[in-house]
Image 1: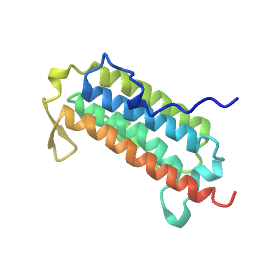
Image 2: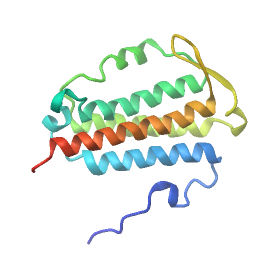
Image 3: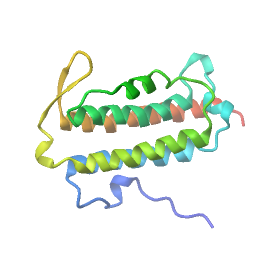
Image 4: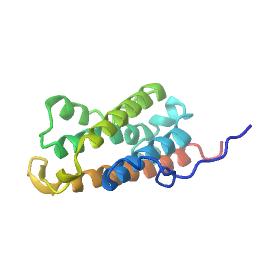
Length: 169
């Protein structure tokens, strides 16, 4: 029996106890996780790593969502990136990813991200932060909103690439 399709996370009335900015970010990450699971979890290893016309593979987008979210939240917490974070950044396009490995990393990364996002007090959202080597100015809220925006952008790219690599099947 098919289960009825749930409305998008932001329309489910969940997380009412969370401040609005963080709630919106958490809902965006929930949607990202659900969409990636729906569209990409059944891909073969070859499909996950395929680079039609040289575009980034689905595997990259899944890794990048987990890892870029970690990096952005590190900046939001007022820290600079660690050597392990920088090393992982350099491996996001590596071939050979399996679905299990990718989704384990994604799910763990988004669970950790949710806890980190919940840890911010709403009074902190206007606190100044700096990003990257050039120390570009932003705020905690700016970084949190970018977490949501950035994840959604890469979900769209992953879904589009999925449609390309599964066309005709």
